[in-house]
Image (cartoon, rainbow, N blue to C red; front, side, top):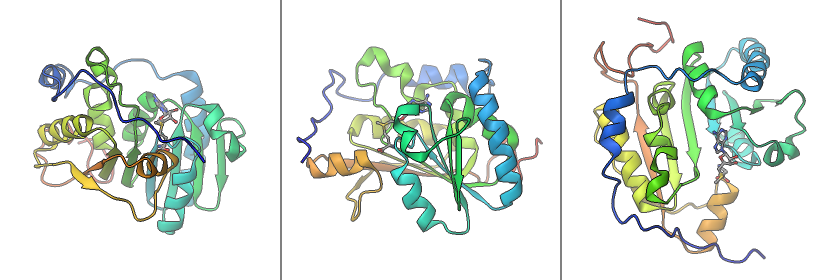
Length: 241
Ligand SMILES: C[S@@+](CC[C@H](N)C(=O)[O-])C[C@H]1O[C@@H](n2cnc3c(N)ncnc32)[C@H](O)[C@@H]1O
């Protein structure tokens, strides 16, 4: 049996005061860091699989070992479920070849999410839902820029799917994520306490069994966005307006 996991230890006791600064600085400006070569190659393979499948997509971003991706594939039988992670070690059970593995309605891709989110948005594929399960919290105040909601790709992460669910075990992360997603989408998003009946991923299982409080933020993205909105430069079909 695994030892209980420790709750998050941080000197940060409320949402980080710098968050709105990141919002003003990044949103509406495309992030220009070049796409890594391995992300580009893997995406080319994925492109062929997605074109052949011709079905809506579900993304499991930061899928780790892929356990959650396989569970999601059993839930979304009419979709292609894509598990994406940068760690070859975590993905090793999925028998990757050239950073990709495809079986039935599941695809695993080894890629960096900072690239993958921008590539997905650019491709305009029909992503109906995205899961972001237990992202690394980066709990020290000085690490705030590494949290996804303070990263320049946050608007790409939100824009590429019709809906998104982020789960975590740190109330402050959930509050910050909800706050930034509300600012960007114009919808009132609040973190909800969450108790899984059946844990979806290994981190969820570990935290749940250790008695941690869990939170989720559910975001609906593609409704009533004005034409000049930072998330609205791609429409539902993914065509640039
Ligand atoms: C805390 S683990 C959670 C894994 C899984 N979602 C779960 O709930 O069990 C975070 C995962 O995000 C992945 N990750 C972190 N930053 C990433 C990035 N920039 N690109 C791709 N994967 C990343 C890590 O490799 C790791 O597998």
